[in-house]
Length: 497
Image (cartoon, rainbow, N blue to C red; front, side, top):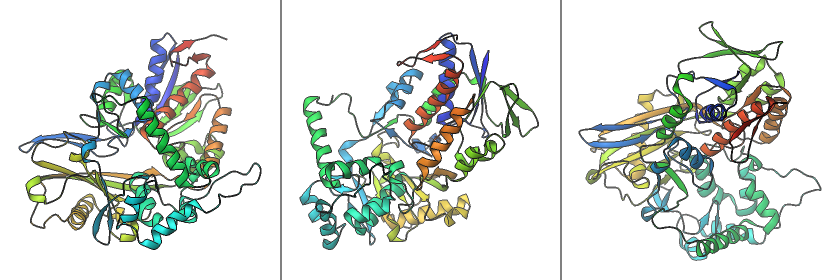
């Protein structure tokens, strides 16, 4: 029997485990063991259901949703039996607020990603100055970037946005969006690795505004041709009723918990002369197998790969990561004095505050808090404010509460019913310029080493669906080396050469 050793029990590692288990159930002579350093599974998917005298609250400590348009999570939810637990956002209260000079302004209607597609809402908003609005409109007249034949098209997000729409759009819109969602610094962020659609849009349409107008037109035509089902609303983001950790528990059950080992710290990896693999543990023991899938953060994978392949290790060392934290607070709605008809607030770096963003969790996701109660989630850290992460958990929780009061206007005498804090040390990989070159090195060298694959959010997408596909592709690679083919429906079929 062939054995796959999976290092890392986040969503990528669990997806890899499920892939091996499906192959075994289909008749392939394969098995796996998953080794996770922490005492729990799920990686950055963490949360809890808090039940007490105030009622029941659902807390997400890491990602609270996934992109609906990407199919991988839907497929996994069906596979592990939690598809009926999926839930859309409450679109009746959808609104994003952006902090400017201590005031909250709604994001103008018609803004798509970083560009306006409706004239009147953009012209009348107080979020941007008139010079800033006029400069954004110049996107229609600025020529597209000229590329030499065969030239690789990439630049930083900051350079692209400033070049096309001006610095005010960068500071007031693009930076807080990528800071709150990607935890990335625009001046280092590779557009080809994060938003390649913007580069393609400029080359095809000549500018961002025309490109997004075309996208909006296509979306409206799609809605006319295929009207949405009111009984099954499809929103931009999707979550699970009991929190994102529901899918982790279901994946662990489906993969087989007897093969999932938590509290197991890996210290080294070695490829033996006969082509098998040994994984060494901190307690002095080792695990033997026929293939290894490394599904950890890139900074954790780098020392493990140093003795296996220096090219891979050097490429991994070039992928930076930033730390962040979330702090959730529950309040009595009657006391906070906050208009809850919004999904949250983005806090631009030019405001010089200590928050990246705030999510109105109980608005965005129905059922996250009982009637009469509200739940906020504050984000701290990010690449431009790493110094704050040197503070203790208690200090960061206090900072988050102070900032919430300042940004949302919560009175000083109003105390939270309870709070929950989650720290993510080096948890967000940064897709800086040259990222795709580094990933290409990793993939090329792994392709040349039988029985080795890497997976996770540090390579070709930080979103949960991307991590799922990454874990599955890693297993597909090693199974193919053993003559096990995967059909298009992903049903594995053993084949002997």
